Length: 352
Image (cartoon, rainbow, N blue to C red; front, side, top):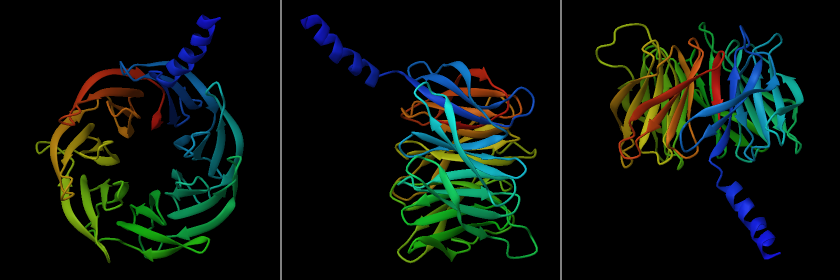
């Protein structure tokens, strides 16, 4: 009897320290891809296994979790364009809850606020950002606000949006600006149509914000660069501008994604064209960055990438070569070393 009681305590403890985590992958559903896939990731070896279709969907190109990880939201590049809510089932597969019109064309990004009751969808094709409230069961309500960022002859290209405290930031590739909206009463209002001046045509695409909300790092698709921004008491200011490319590279390049390491000592950006991950050392006190490595991605067209929750591995979605590359992260230097690759059709977005 005592032996059985001990087992009851040992088994839950073992499950809490499981070395396998689910990885969800958003794709473009051309060729062999059918929707959102789920794989098991081994946090000890960095291996991916047990690939299965989590849910059939059309072009779920970007996906994100609710804060409680009970729901997943995906944009669908369809006609009409949509944003969809899914419930994560006990077996890891996804159950459709509902879809809403994205109120724009070619939605390319969706984010959820910290409390899990609002979603923001970036519509690249129309330069609009749509805000939705979220019900307790994870489903989406009808759109509550639509921000049209078109303001001149050049079309707006809203590419990503993130909630931070009471603010919503939007990277607009067409306007070469990061917009800032602030929460007032029960909605968002425009505070700035450019937190810093960006010269030329860099094309801000994605960005990473430090935990203390003091620094923003913007990766520029056309400029092949990262703009480092510091928040002061009254405004934002640019403190650094760094190339993501190797000095010897002279071909075409289109930057894509950007992430900070868990301890915020390192910064990573993806280069489509050069097909590398640019690794930067971050000076925590000043916020400036210094490039220390250009790591080939062992694939073609690295779109989105992610760091696993342990911070020991990086996974890169190589869209055109249809594979996910796994790298080991050196905790002391931040540098990457290639481990292995897993084939998967048209991977675009990786989600732990």
